[in-house]
Image (cartoon, rainbow, N blue to C red; front, side):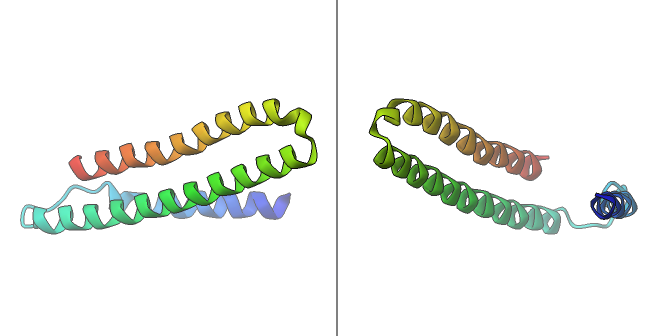
Length: 107
């Protein structure tokens, strides 16, 4: 527990130390085209990772629900409802990532 708290504290300090560079004002001579290019690239990577993780999570969820239904066919209805709710929540995380990527690109 102490090790985990130490790691979280270190991560927070690291974020605080690097956040000042991220929120610093841009100089007058900086190229906006270069910044937009890197925003698009980073957003594309974030969305690709989120979509891949979402697809993997959904496939595991469906496989587990089908396995549970095969073991106990009487619980199929309850498993189906829980699976659909879980799939909607997983998909919403990918949609949130998409919205954040749009904010990054347009912001």
